[in-house]
Amino acid sequence: MKFNLNFETDYGQFYLNDKKPNGKTNSDCFWTDTALEDKLAIEEGILGILIGKQEGIVNCEFEILQNKSTISNFDNSDHIVEGSLKINSGVLQITDCPFSTIELETKIENGEYRVRIYSQNLESVETDEPKDFYKIEMWKEEFNERIVLKRYHK
Image (cartoon, rainbow, N blue to C red; front, side):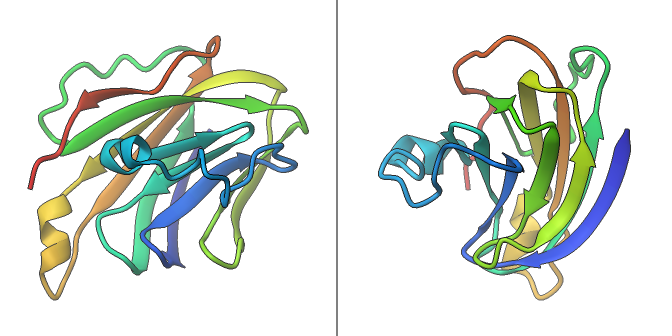
């Protein structure tokens, strides 16, 4: 399943989460220094995805894959990070910040998933016409620690 999303968010973040996450976005363990540097916060049942600007439109492609991503050429992306997400409610959501407006809600099989976020055109957020773009892939995989596959340096 593939979804193209275009929505507004604030505080430089949005969320990919289980409909009933056990974790909290206001937890001291959520937006740690490491999470900010890696552009991905993780709590039980919720991922916080950091974008390149403090507010504005998020242009995003989200895809649920049958198998692990096969993309190995990272030249088109500025920053790539992976984290794990457990789904217990059978429903996955993408929500904005701070209002938690549901931008996407879809039924999904319960279990552990791996999520990879590709951040593209991050330099453009400094211009009057930002063209940043976020590609998110998700597939079933056992829980694993957050890993940065490519780090963005200004």
